[in-house]
Length: 121
Image (cartoon, rainbow, N blue to C red; front, side, top):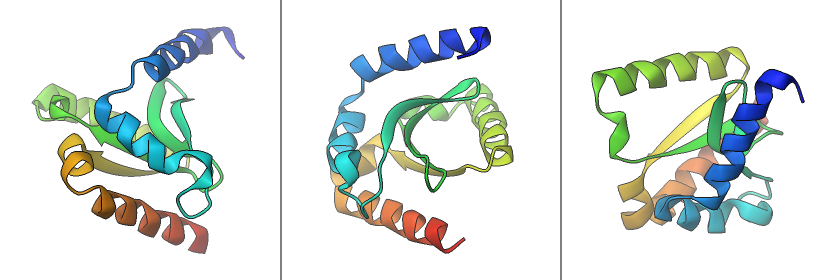
């Protein structure tokens, strides 16, 4: 690990211990290859950012967004982050907390579709 990565790794470890309720619910369905047989990790450092969930083999990141992604400065940060991740070859799939709570089967189907598409490329 490079010296400049240590703060990101430490933050990722902390976030694993403090996952949101929606993240915990989704993690129960992504862990241990339960979805499409693909291995996901949680709170994964990717450069200077931390992905909520990542399938490294297919380079798919799943982000669970709460209410903190609506302000202009937050949208600008998300756009910068998405550009960085895309430049690294990652695809990003966003879901909302409310979708996890109210439409978990739809969320899982959306992720499954993304995984199948990633396998085709």
